[in-house]
Image (tube, rainbow, N blue to C red):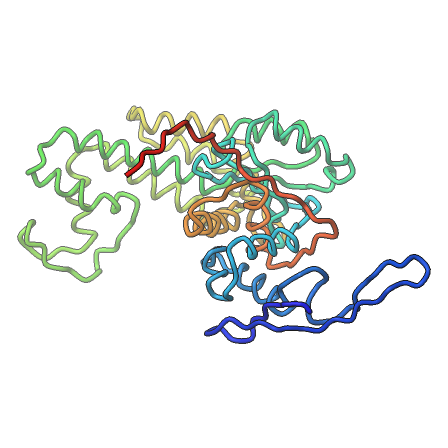
Length: 386
């Protein structure tokens, strides 16, 4: 008699009692049971239950605990089902490889894990535990030279070890810096200039109020014909264009940093590779000769990474090179980590990421034993009698 749990009803737990014939070999006297299509061998969960559990775990919002409550199983059973049936292998390196890190909140031995992403097919190729240079070099050394030569483009951020690894491991590939990180650095320069000027005024002044509440306008180019809204603090009706003009009159540096941001933003969004190469030098040095420390630091960074920033304007199959797809995927990975309240080990975390994003059930032919996280031993204590 076999006792098998079956996901027949969501409201009530369902259990099947199946009579399974057991046969005896006349020559060796070994026994074996008859195979069936209802449940795997030595399993107390049916095939349909396993299928429902895996389909549910494809959702980022579902945890092992919520899935176990949904199908009236124990948390350990759901985790074992996932470990037994989901063990995706590394995908081959793509033509366009995007590399980015994800902050794992220090729950593993390294604070940042590395995501290898297929830019064209929007698939996660693999997840590496640590972004240290030595660890990534060891990882790529295990991949054949023929496979690495198939990579034509690599998109990274401004993390120096990524560039060093790309040059050593992928000498034939073109390296590009993601434009999102360039705009992020420029936005930080705008933020630092605004905060430096804002600290010159007391909290009750109109200047402080404008720089604090409407800081986002320094990164916009509003039109003067937009609808005006009443502002009791400024005592009148104003639109975003009017308020921006008031902000720019506070300090000349605000006018320069705003014009620089809007100009480079337009250049970044509307240029192709040929236009970018022709206008890059004139654009990044367009700061009217006024020395602003934050802007000078950004210009120095642009000059240092010039070749790789220009490569980000290259289009592959009609799409400009960027880390936009992997940045969008990172938000889903963070949601998975937040909802699950952390993971006990990296391998399960890596399998869950690839399983949820790629939407592929990769049944492992060999059971992979996932080691539990090592915790500190409990200290000595004395029992007290009441």
